[in-house]
Every structure is written in C-alpha cells, then in structure tokens.
Amino acid sequence: MSSSLRSLRISRRQFLRQVGFLGAGAALGSSLLAMPGRSFAEYAEPIRTVAAAGRKVCLTYDDLWNEYYTFRIASFYHQRNIRIALFPVGRAITNNLERPHRNHENMYARMQAMGHEIGCHLYTHRHHRKFGLQQLIDEEMEPALAAMRQALGADFMPIGIRPPYGHITDAIQELAALYELPVIMWGVDSQDALCTVNTDCESACATTDDESAACTKEECALICIRHILERLDKYMRPGHVVLNHGIRNAYLAAPPLLRLLHRRNLQPVALSQLLAWAG
Image (cartoon, rainbow, N blue to C red; front, side, top):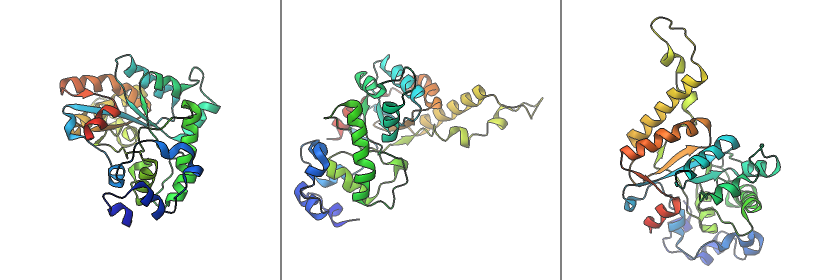
C-alpha cells in the first residue's frame, strides 16, 4: 500500500503533489470538483455495509449491457417508488448513445429521471489489477465520465466508483480519492450473473420417470431465481449494499426479492440515503 494510503488526514493538495497530479485540474476538467474536501482514507475505504442504517438495504445493479432488462428493472422499481443504484460500464452508455435498441433511446437520462442513482463502473470492464493511476484515468475513468456527461449533462458526477470484478487496488483507491468519490462495494452478492453457469438445471429438472428430461429455458430461470433468493435470504443483513446485474435473472427475481425484503422487515433505500448514515 502506498504511503499516501497510510495517511489518515492527507490533504487533497498534498495527495495530488505526491502522485504527480498537482495542477491536474485543467487536464481532468471539472472531474475534481465533485465534493467538499474529505480525508484520503474516507474516500479510499470501501463501503460494503452501513451499520447505522438500521433495517435498510440498498439494491444495486451492475454492468447494464442488456438495455431491455436494465430498463425493465429500473421501471419495475420506479413503479413501486423504490430508488436503486445503477453502475453501468461506460461502454454500455456509449452503446446506448450511439446504437440504442428500439424504445431505449436516452435510457440513462430516463432512468435518472425516475430517481435512480448512477455510479461509475469504469469504461471497459477489463481486469485492471496491473493498471497504475494514470492508466486508470486515461483509459477508464475519463472515458466513462465523458460518456456519462454526454448522456446526463456536463455537470454530472457519479455517486461512487465500483471497480469491475470488485478488484480494489492501490490505484483504484488513489483514483477514488483523486475524484473525491466513495468506493462502493457490496455486502452480499446475489450471484445472479453466475446462476445459469453454476446451476445444474438438468439434474434439478430430471424426474424419476425420465431422468434425461431436458430443462426448458423458463424452468432453468425459475431454478436460478430460487437459488438467488436462497442466497440473499441466507447472507443479506441490515445495512447491506446488495449486488445484482442488469440481466434477465435479476429482472425475474425482482418481485420475489421485494417479498423477501418485506418478510425480513428490510427497507430498500437509495444509495445516497444509505451513505448519509455512514457519516
């Protein structure tokens, strides 16, 4: 870990000087003007759960390559007055701007108008463990911000940074401090994106009469939903940030997920509300 990460009260100017970005505001545009100054450690420390939030949780959805299911997820929660946090890959935003699916034009502005909050999942979703700070800025953060601002306005700032694959490196923490954005991780992963890969649908669908019976797409989806809900019921706790993805499994799991939250007396809230309890 870098020496700057060990400092609990390093000033923003000191940090920029240490990593060689003093005066970088001109190069980074208004990116550095997001929030009032806080300590380096406050930005670099990942947020997975907020104990002070009581029986509140935040539902978050990553990647958002699939415009059809992403928009259906956003609409489903909007109709129920629930605000979720969306962490799109920057390239997915570019795709929507340049080649939107029919009826999904201006999708990000429309989802923001629903009250949903939007974070940064970088631009390419590449593995970035070996990336230094400058490479993250040039190839990931600035392109992602450019796409977001094209879709959401020149002054837009994401609510936080979520590194792809959950890989937190020194450079990611330095990036978060540089842009004055919290690192938003998760307390529980629904594993919706892994469900179809990891689930033995054929065995689950087989009957004693015909063990070779093929599992239909719908049957496999129902099995995946059951596994998602079982996992969330087992591991989800008050104050958790909950990880999902903008995919079919997550959309189909949304109604029973709300029933699960109700049964557990857990209230879904906006990420900004959860972060307010973090102090």
